[in-house]
Length: 282
Image (cartoon, rainbow, N blue to C red; front, side, top):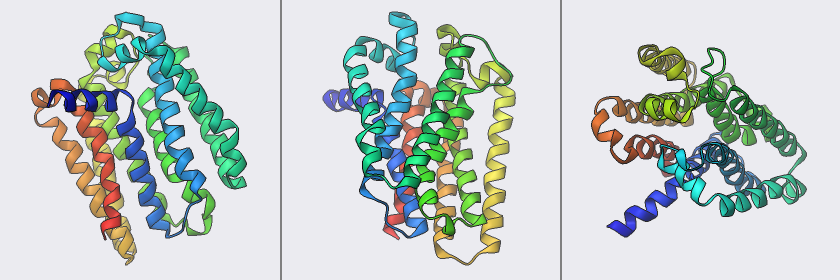
């Protein structure tokens, strides 16, 4: 059991659960559009997600050194050199041989997503320890994650982008935001000690809770609009999965002491984004 726990912690510290969630979510979008994606997209998506998330962790590890208050930042500090080496190899892959095999539209999307991620990371560094009322890192992470997982199929098959599909993308982004807001609520004290900016530190716990409730309401309302405007079976399936994801995320709020232990809120929250793969069972 101890060996399994250690391997699972390594899996999480390396953000591989986030990568799997991106693959599962991206595969749901592929299922929705009903078209095949080129093999290079299946390779580029997990690589790009890992590079973006690890960039953030390495920046924090470099700044905090051994003063970090979270296990993942300490992990990135201890193994900074090998992680940075792998990060550089994958980044160069995304910039060199991956575009060689990718269709033009995917290359353009990749450049756009790379620019968006660079702007986000640049703002995080620029804001630093300051508590900003105008920049929330959670919004940048959620936007990059949602557009990154949905953008490939959408950019290759623009003719299949319907208002309902756009609404589904918005719902997915809001689900990612709810997840990130819960993380920020649980990590408010460590963020404060480590000098991280976060939405909770900027607007407080109560307002963050209201945002979570508001996002949940919007997700449900968009789902009602979609279901009343379409008879497409795939959209019904996706709405069912979104509701399941929303309910699973909301459970994090009901037993904070249990979820706080061993960062279970992160395991649960990131694990929720594996649920989109259920579409392939239909």
